[in-house]
Length: 119
Image (cartoon, rainbow, N blue to C red):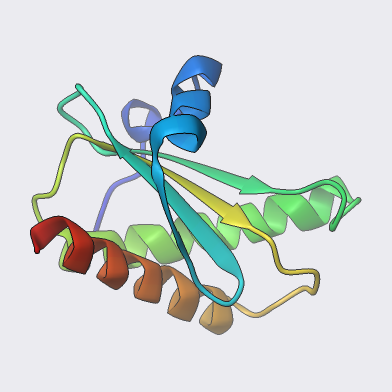
């Protein structure tokens, strides 16, 4: 299992903008993963849900919690010792979904990322 802490959180606006501007993108059916290689020694992540598709803050927060938990459960096994990357997960689906659907999307994104980075 991967441990999500404040040290692994991507909070700086300029860092997040750099991921979107110069990073690469992988998409699944509900979630997109933007990633860029960073100079740091840790894997940093951010999670986002758009206001236009989900106007209630409680819905956005629940979707972010689902993505965080799916990432936490699967990142350790799939990514292993891959470090020095910044990730931004963006939920673009318009419906509320179950944890199983979110977990499948996150898993497929992490596996696709691993294939691209290691090959």
